[in-house]
Image (cartoon, rainbow, N blue to C red; front, top):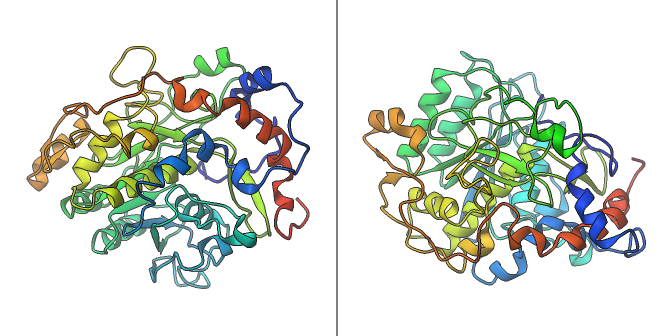
Length: 404
């Protein structure tokens, strides 16, 4: 499927070009291969300044429902996973803690990994204090089958505040759309991957010229926050689909996650990984402001995002901007009205649920500078290049690694 993680070696595939500026900045004389810790190889945590905003909140007290292939038992998630639901067909062995392809486990670890594995040197999620509610579904959703719709409704009726769907399908489904409207009526935030598509080349010029991708769901469903992917330089990733369904963006290149079926970690990429980081950002902000509504949490995430450099309020590449919890956490600004959903694509659904729809920039937060290539990315860019070169390709050796 489009969001299936594609494990790759460094500089293999269409996603590697954003790292070239980093190589030009730092050269190749970095730490020797394998010398960096797992935490240091998680470039997105360094560039996003996670250590700073973890002083404000870690996601504690917030549950994220992960609608995916299940969440397996890995050291990074010990004590983080709550009893969930298994909505996979009866013929599929196991339950919601059985993850046959590792996708859901990886997304959960990117969100809420504790870093306590490997003697405290393991993988950390962006919101390590959050809990995970696993809801297992088939990786493909068929309209009429409505397994994803049932999962969204199950999440809506749970204590989870954030719903993460790091998957997509090319077909709309009225039952799924109704489930999203129901989730929003219950005060939840729903994030979904916008999907990946083929590109015509790997150079910046070729990527800039790529055609808009197809609409994929539920990211294109009104009320869902569609998430695109960017790389270490802040540029949209080569594979991330573009279009009106894109509401925001997050890192989605060389994101460490537990390897499927193996010990150790692998570098993964895609809009699914970006979605997990967007969901984690919402959990972070909600943990710091537990009295806020989902509308207010989302509005502040939008207000504090690194905005497009083309001067537009939003564009089809990164939506309203790249998430910046390092700004949102310490300086959120006014959260705006509690009962106004901040994305305009929810007008029709809002009318059906009695909610109001509004624009995303009704309340401006204090900022440290804007632009897709602002300091949130460039601060750690050189370090990211060194660590990717010197560590990511050998990361699978950090724990009791098996052959790649």
